[in-house]
Each structure stands twice: as structure tokens, then as C-alpha cells.
Length: 252
Image (cartoon, rainbow, N blue to C red; front, side, top):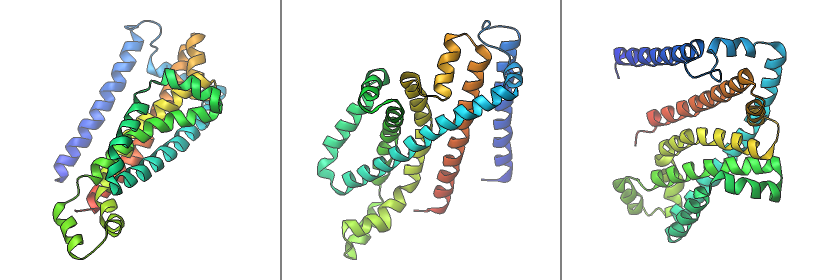
């Protein structure tokens, strides 16, 4: 990709961000959506109040801990189980149906049961991990199922077992697709963690948003939403960079 094209893409991205931020500011300034949509400048000014900033940072730390733990658990289980299903395809049909069934259960149905069974904090981690697991599981199976037939035949010619080929080739070839699934799972982890805090009542940005909605604390609500969005974007960018690096380095 030429330098001019890269510069144009970055320029368009920056322009899009500026238009988006400007639109939010204009809607709030002219009250086009009512009093529940404040100007972005008002929200930013509210955030920089010392007590508010400390409260938001404390809540962000609690929520981010749940997100990262759930993300790690979901990604690990997805990669392990998808690898086992890839090595033992006899069990794929049953595994796929079970995973799809669990993912199809809405959060409002499963969250109360989890809270009763395992408690509020652990239920949040499990709920977020379920959403992460499904996305990464499907991406991992897709990557492992798109192996180059010529390369697979070459391993067979040299007498490599499927286990030797799996660790020497399959994982490497599927890595970009797995990382893509991990990138797509970031929003799922964030949404799952916030929803879990709504149901469990555990301290964090989710509970802060719920409390702000009930008490019509609009600046606090938007501040919490902004912190969630910023964390999700930063996390998404980190995983997206890893995916781009993998696609550039793994030329298979």
C-alpha cells in the first residue's frame, strides 16, 4: 500500500472522528434530542471535577478487571475447545450445537440464575466470558478449517501426524483468523461485563450508569458511557494491532 493511500485513509479516519464529535456537540448544544443529551463539552467539564474523576477511575478499574478476566477466560476456553474439536471432528456437531444454544440464551434469562448460583461478582465474569467464547470459538474453527490443502498434503508426505502438524502448522496458519475473532470479541466482553454489573449490582461503570439513569444524573451517565467507550476502543485497538502484525508476518 502506497504512502499516499495510507495518508488518505488516516485523513478520512480523522475527519470522520471530528465529524462524529462535532455532531454530538451540536445535538447537545441545540437540545435536538432533549435534555437527556448534553453537549460533549459539558460532559468533559464534568469529568474533570476531582471527585467525579476519582469515582470514575475507581469504577473503571473494577469494570476493566472483570472485562480482562472474562476476556482471558473466554479466549482460552474457545481456543482450547476449538482445537480439540479440530483434532477430533467427530465431536464437532455436538459442540457446535451446544455452543450455539448457550449463546442464544439472552442475558436477562441467564444472569439471574448465575447470580443465585455463584454470586454477583463471579456471575459477571461468566456472563461476559460466554459472549467472548462464542465469537472466538467460531473464528478459531473457521481459521483451522481453511488450511492450505497443498501444505497439509506436504505434511502427510513427510509422515507427520495430525498432532505434529497441528502444533507446527495449523495454529500458525489460523492465528490471523483467531486474532480477528479476539478483536471482534472485545465489544462482546465490554457489553457482557456492563450488563452483568446491571444485574448483579456490583460496583463498576455498569452500576454507575444504572444509578445515574434512575436518578436522572445525565452528566454522570454520559461520563460513565464515555469511559466505557474509551476503554473499549483502546482495547479494540490493541488487539487489532496484534491482528495486523500477525497478518503481515504470517505469509502463508
